[in-house]
Image (cartoon, rainbow, N blue to C red; front, side):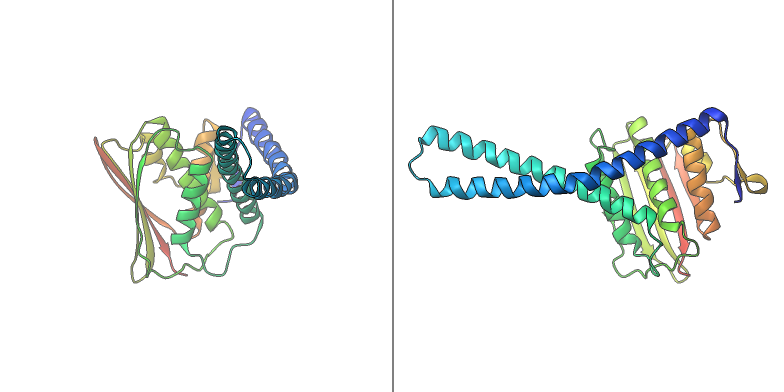
Length: 246
C-alpha cells in the first residue's frame, strides 16, 4: 500500500479528528495533576472522618456513603485517563520487538469498555491460548492496525445490536491465529466484504471515512503478512486472522 485517495470532505473529517485527538492528548496530560490532588484530599477526608467518633450517626452514614461514591467515580475517571494516556503513548511509540497479542486484546477490550464503545449489553467471551508465542512485527503498524480493526468490529457490533462476541486465540506452528465470532447475528456485509479487500495498485479509495478506516486497517495488516479468512451465515459469522510469528 503506497497511496490513499481522499475527497476534500474526507480530508477535512480526518484532519478534524486529528485535531480533536491532539486536544484530548493535552487534556489527559493536564488532568493528571488535579486528579492526583483530588485523590489525596479524599484520602485525608476519609482519615479525618474515621478519627471523629462524635458525629451524628445519620450524618456519618450519609457522609460515608457519599465519600464512597466519590471514590468509586474517581477510580473510574482515573482509570479512563490512564488508559487513554497509555493508548496515546502506544500510538506514538515504536512497536515492541515481540508482541503479546493476548495481552493486547485484553487491553483493547478494557479500553473499549471504558470508553463506552459497548453501549448495549454484549456477552463477550475470551478463549485465550496462554501458551502461544509472541509475534515479531514485520512493520511498525501491526499493533496500531490491529487495534483499529478491533475498534471497527466493535463499532459494527454496536450498529447491528449484536449481543454475543467470542474472541479466540491459538498458537499454530507458523502463525498466531485470532478469531472474532458472533452468534445469533452476523457482522455486517460491509465488514465481511472488507476482509477480502486488495487495494488496486497500492491505492485505497472509499465512499466514506468509516470505510476508509477499516480498509486502511486491513491493508496495513495484510502488508504485515496477516492472512484473513471468514465463515458467515444468517445467524453467525467468524473473521480469523493468521499472524506470522516473524
